[in-house]
Each structure stands twice: as C-alpha cells, then as structure tokens.
Amino acid sequence: MLTLAIDCSARLCAAALHQDEADRILASMSPDIGRGHAEQLPGIVASVLAEAGRQLTQVDRIGVTIGPGSFAGIRVGVSFARG
Image 1 (tube, rainbow, N blue to C red):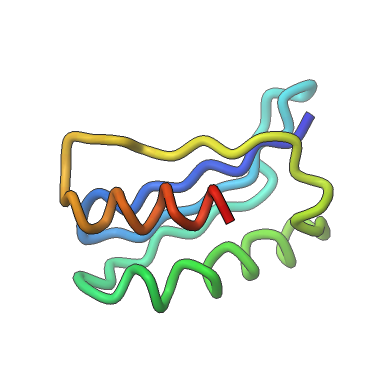
Image 2 (cartoon, one colour):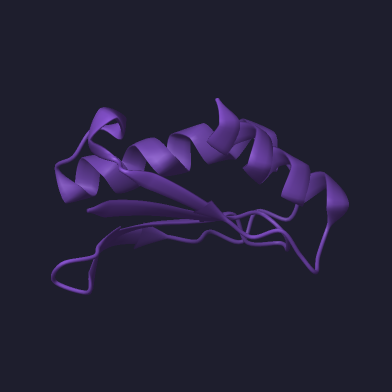
C-alpha cells in the first residue's frame, strides 16, 4: 500500500511517499517556501512521485496535516488531496 503524506501547515511545503509493507519512505521533499503553497504543492508531489518511480494513480491513500498551523496552508493540503 502506498501512502502520500502532505503537510502545508507551516513554512515548509512537504510531501512524502511511504510504502507501508516495507515501512519505508520511498521519496520526500520539504522545501521552505514561506508562501505560495497552492502554486508549489502540485510540483512537489510530482517530484516526489517521479523520484519514487510511481504515479498518482498508484497511491492508495493520502494523509494531510490538519493542524495546528496556517489555516490557509491546511486548506491547500486538504483541497489538493480531495482533487
């Protein structure tokens, strides 16, 4: 099972891909961007997936930080996860 984890609640805009069976992180990225999470998150997720050699269609579940933190950033993460 593949889990995509997203955290946009702070200055960092983080994404990681975790393989549950092996309990290991396949790829991760967490640049300190300050603002602009909505613009940066799709590219960060694409980079993480590419580094892991996976596609979004292979992801089984998505986890998103829901706080505490920036309300706007949390909305970005949740909106991205919902599609």
